[in-house]
Image 1 (tube, rainbow, N blue to C red):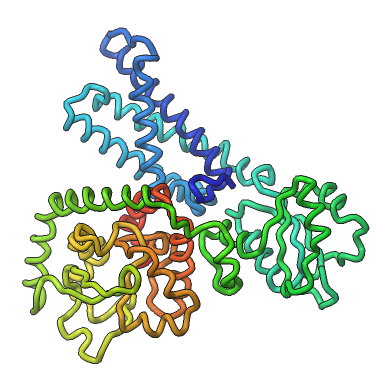
Image 2 (image 1 turned 45 degrees about the vertical axis):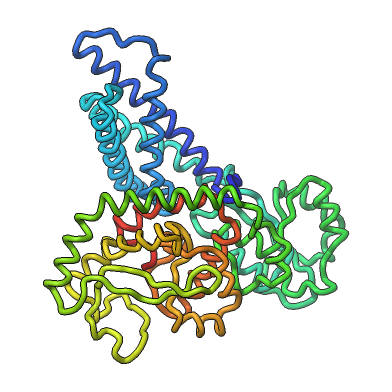
Length: 461
């Protein structure tokens, strides 16, 4: 994987994206030459069009990221990838045509955009047919040796068997006398020189997956492997990198303290985040005001009660604040007390069902963002009635309140709908990853992929 601004991206995705950029620029050039020939004008120098080609390629790739073209499912299924490609390219072309119209530019003619769209669809699908199979081969998977043969090693085995896994486990070494869970593990005593064994297997990374580390760390072996140029990783850090979440079953306070992350000296990025929140929330409120007012009226017509409702939530540093949303439930929804929302909740009104599905009920929260109580990106704020129980049952739950809550977040784009203690545990693992690895780049990635959640109702509410 390639680490970009503290976030890991698989090599296969990076290579596929770079090839896509080149093909999209080529598609735009072919469309320009085709249209120039049709109307009988000189196509001119290629250098004069490099800017428009780069803009076309960048916008389409960003659109592809936002709808999940580079996700695990798209890398596995050609049918899935083709469907998302069509949507992404269409959205990108519409955005380019709209922007060109607003600024009165002549960089993207409607005719050339139509040709570019056709060429792009053909070239990108061919790219996936030709390159897709190659990306799934072992050439793009790190060769991993696991030190350990217990339950942790078994978890790595299951993780490595996923089609989208970026690593391949080449062996397991049992480091204790206990009966191994992974039966094919080789006993450490059977290997005379572990460093030579690692070199012979062509291992690029060794993962320490011992069940009991106290007085059991093979320090001499690890030191020799490390000095031989092979990356040595700890189990929790490996899981964090491969899954995009902090594994609550294995982390401990010392790992959270000494591992990379939770950087306090990020004043510049925090200031930039606040400036973005102010500008984006003000613009969103201005643009969507007619939509909010229209659905506020529909909510009033559909059921008795106010169009908007306020609800107390726990925010930064555990401070309570009121969140404002369009009402999607009956006014008597919680006469029996606070309840978890469910997927097909009978308390939801007819209009409420629609506005929740397309996230229109969330739009008024832009006012909360403008006031500074929330951000666009961050852990979803929870109700105080639930937070007290969650902090008792889930370790490190209070740490999610060390960052400002958001309208969308890393958990929302990665975890399916759910509302229970177990779901909260899963989402907490993603929230901790976000808090630990926050950068403006990760925020940008989350905002882009929120479009996928809205279009296909993926992720969590």
